[in-house]
Image (tube, rainbow, N blue to C red; front, side, top):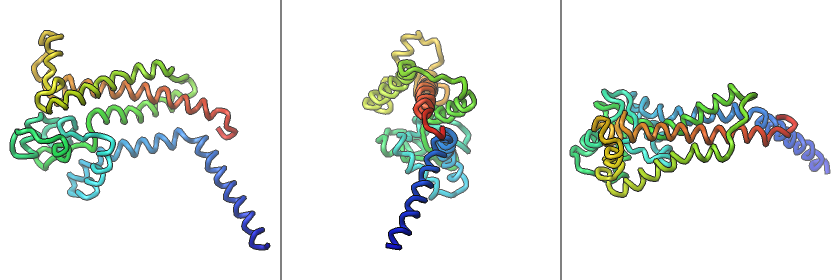
Amino acid sequence: MATSQAREPQSTALAHATDRLFDWLVAHWLLVTLIILGVWNLLPWLAPVLMHLGWELPAQGIYWLYVFFCHQLPTRSWFLFGPQFTYSRDQILLAATGATDLVTPVRLRAFVGAPAMGWKLGWSDRMVSFYGGWLVVGLLYAALRPRWRGLTLKVAILLMLPLLLDGLTHMLSDLGGLRWGFRETNVWLAWLTQNAFPPAFYNGDQWGSFNSLARLITGLLAAFGLIGFVFPYIDRKLADHPAA
């Protein structure tokens, strides 16, 4: 009987502690979320730093973790500690295989770089803008929180559609091969613009190409649409909580 009575106050104390923790999380959910997003965005940049320092095991752990969230194709990634920020498909193939013959995307994505060319980030340029945009828009929302009413669902969806279109066309293009896919050559765009830009703008994924700019812009637009809708929505839903 005494044991049972002793357990009751312990159970009550645990319930109160849980309630206090929940109340704190409700009141500070934005801070917690921004910290998580900060760590989430830092790790892919940490991978090439660790490779550069020779700490390959933790770097490979980061690459392995983020492969579940990104294709990690080096042709669509940024490189640190090398002479170039991005590389052409043939430059990467030559470094990865010793030849410019095409390899499977699975084998190509496993290439993380080399001392002479630097080391790639743990995710592609699209993820830099998309997930990085979550953090940037989240910080912007934190600064403007009292005055930010939030985007409507319709506007949020419209802002995310370009990313969906760009991602789907890249995926369909990759089915045609990493050399001859219609997003690799962008002949359609050259025809539409009557070759108004240099050839490097239309071909490949290197920095400054149409593909790289499209991934960056659509990623940022989607991030703004998603976070600009979701964060104010969460605040509205939590507004009635006593600790909010």
